[in-house]
Picture 1 (tube, rainbow, N blue to C red):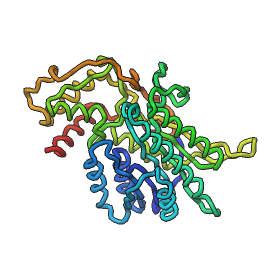
Picture 2 (picture 1 turned 135 degrees about the vertical axis):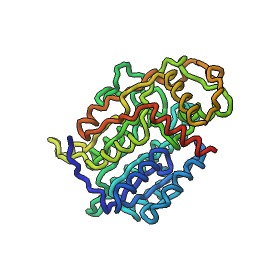
Picture 3 (picture 1 turned 30 degrees about the vertical axis):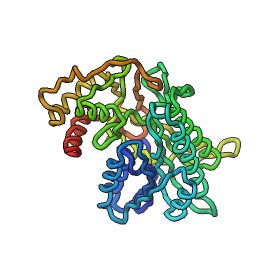
Picture 4 (picture 1 turned 45 degrees about the vertical axis):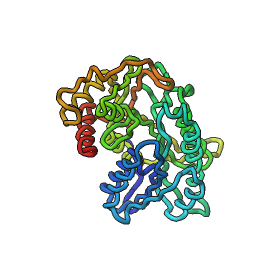
Length: 357
């Protein structure tokens, strides 16, 4: 197991996408666990989904007072990013800002280029120039990648050693591009960076475009839910608290800087999967979701679930299975996501009942 080489106490941490599902939960955890950490959060609050959820997440961070600073802007705005770095001099940068969603990328490609490519480039450039004039600069850049980079790979579980050269969506292509860009900047400018491939993140106050949330909305409205590939899909559902725990551990170990035989830096660069390593069949998943929605009182006891299910073909950009190999994460950090699906969906159902009462 690796020994932590980063002390977060008294440091400034920049979290991009801080109003997002993962960003807000990470900010809250960091501010709770590290009493002298200051979090600078930036988010442009897009209307990709209900912005009231984003504002609610930000509202919960107000209790931390001056230790949390929110900046309403986009990382695609180069001047805004430069201002943040020049004013706050972040010690750790965690890039979670991105346009998410596989299907949305098919009809709205511009949003992905702007946020996921231009935005990430701006973050990399700001990290690069944080070392100007002999300053210490950014100690560690951690950024969100995605299980989508594995495309339709037939070898499972997905390992970070696998080739990921055949994305099946623009979203996946942008996430693979992020990994390549980070590697280049690590090589050229000795920026320590770690990419995290997240697997199907879910939980309370999550993203309404994700299946568990979208299905719930439709069932509550009495609409049919569409189960793709006739239910013959498996997803490695990973609970939000496990994702955040993985990030917290990873940011505290900076990949080592070394010089190669060419006299140039050996890239201080790592990639990890963070997933539950327990793929669930979609039909089993929706059954568990239905049972927990019933138990929480979100749906009435006499709800006709079978009448509200529709089995449909696979959609463009989808893959039949996601399955994380987390052995490197376990080896280096002594951690493996382990929240059972039913436990996570139960917490979501109780949150949903309370939030939309």
